[in-house]
Length: 304
Image (cartoon, rainbow, N blue to C red; front, top):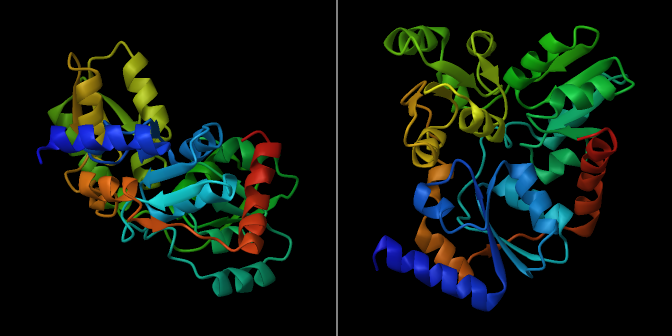
């Protein structure tokens, strides 16, 4: 089958089988094109709750599919490629987090959405990259134990000097690849370009950016801006997607190494197999789901 033929088969099957397809923005272009919704992980999980479809296919990584299941327990949720994990989400073991909670008993435990469901069961509140500053500022606790991304944590800590942050070593192995030297090099090559960075980048990178925000925030900024050139400091799929959306503008990757291997695992064949009911269905114990949902509910309560 050609790419177009496989896309058409997937579109036909999802209509007939009452399926909704979610694709994270870092997915391949041919996968994003057959999705009902594309965007950031939490936003996709919320959109899934609003659809009447009985089956959801997540084209992303495991924690994202788990979040969909946490919020939509009545739906069948499939992870398009069962091998697609998130190294950052899996860096911290629940046993170690329990030890840290004992070490910092007065700290509120804040989990980045990029965490496993098991870790979320031990946390007080969940945050996204776009809501972290707002949510953590609203917490009554002055001390915050932030997991797992030290770079996002430091970025928010810089914005909230009134809070005391505790960190665990960890972060996104993709975003950490870029340095200040990369920023200087690309800026010299494209002096008229605005630099848009994700807060999962090192602080030495984000502090030089013209805009810092989530993946969706970066996309929206580039779409609405009158500028014609942009350096994109996040996964390089965003460069590709923006080039399709705005062919009159120019987009340059901050680093050729900004490639997430896990996000690139999902293929159209994986999606087609899920449409046939052959993929991995996400299953969570109800006790785990309810415990993990508490920190997400707390985020919503605080304005997330």
